[in-house]
Length: 423
Picture (spheres, rainbow, N blue to C red):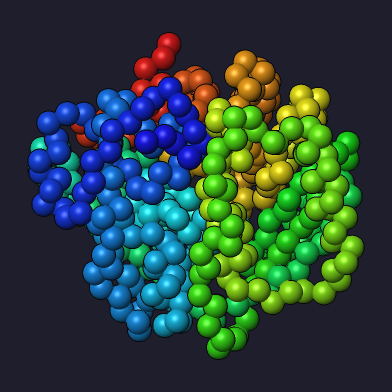
């Protein structure tokens, strides 16, 4: 087992959990509960090399179609929930960029979506959790009951106990279709103007940015739900990358060609499109095993949140390095606070890019970016990270000590070991 980013140096042995009773037999060695394996870095890799895969615990236990409250097991994927609830008129309030994330993974990383300015993080819509500890204690927690455990478990990276079940509050939805409007911007100033205006009037907003262009041009997308009774089932991948090439085809030449083509094709579109919600929320899911495109050495994602003026400095560093990706995402966070102690989103702008792994060249680039993020009181996203220094983590997530105090002694990830035990 490897992380989604392809970290090769930490092999993992996986044991499947299908029923909660099986967990009692799994505490002999230090371990870590994982879901679908979509974390890019090492937060989903056990320091011991022994992980417990919870995707077999994928049952929806109770769904109230009047209130929109769903109780389910930890290993249910977000896509499976949508298939069940959208036809009944309910949707998860917050969705990340892939449907192939488990409920427990979404909670442990407190994922965010394209509507953070209006709905905050996934954790804001969790009503209660059921955890099991290695001493066999079961902890049912919520904002009003054993709240310290609740806040430490949301964005707690799966360390406070194995999440067995969760109760979620869904939101009403008129149908499975969205209206999507795309607007080109020629420079960052235009992005910030579009973002300020759009976040007030549209539920979903996000931008793609040309990370190699001198003026940081891009495409701003905004969408809203519409009433449409037509079914729009989530699609399986239209294409699957069949193998991992020895070298990544992502380089400065292919990047420039792709970015130019992608930017200029928007000239042909001058009106909103009506699209299935799966195509809007999960565009990368249309390509199966897309992570293979980065070659046998894998990739690392760099995602941070910083004050708006700092974005220009980060993009300048990336442009000078001639490294980057097709998948460069820019989004303004709102000020809705998560109940999670170590939640990544906070007021500011988040920038996310994938980088083919080039060893020391990539680490040197990341060190330059880290210096800018740190000096401007920014933060790096643990769910995507595989390099962050302990000092940077502890500065950005000062509540880590509370999570460490409540951490189950049998649960530890490679990330947690790296960022809490270094000097």
